[in-house]
Length: 131
Image 1: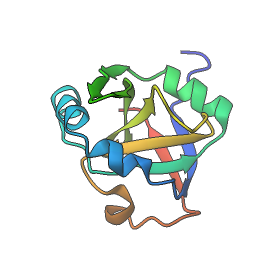
Image 2: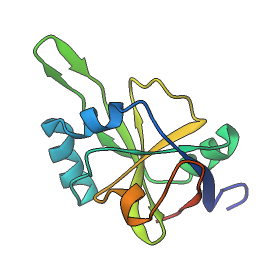
Image 3: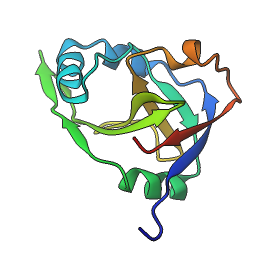
């Protein structure tokens, strides 16, 4: 497949903390567990990436949609999940319908705390690969 990226390189960076809140919401957790095959760790790994490379790489991945929901008067949007791997660990790039990030930052979820099990710190380089 011409032009398809087989990997995306990123630099670990600290996010604003929203991922932990959203990953702890039961409707998202249950839906992700059902559709991805694992309950996500309550947090995301944020990676600074090249926007154009991210766009190409993500377009080569399968898409799994997680529906939005309403809680009281608050509307929570859909989440688009793109299964992939980091160091042989199944994970997914997530793109929330309502996000503060552009494609120069990708958020990655896994059933594990990726920072902890891969011993990552801000500034570390990491490679996301096809599943």
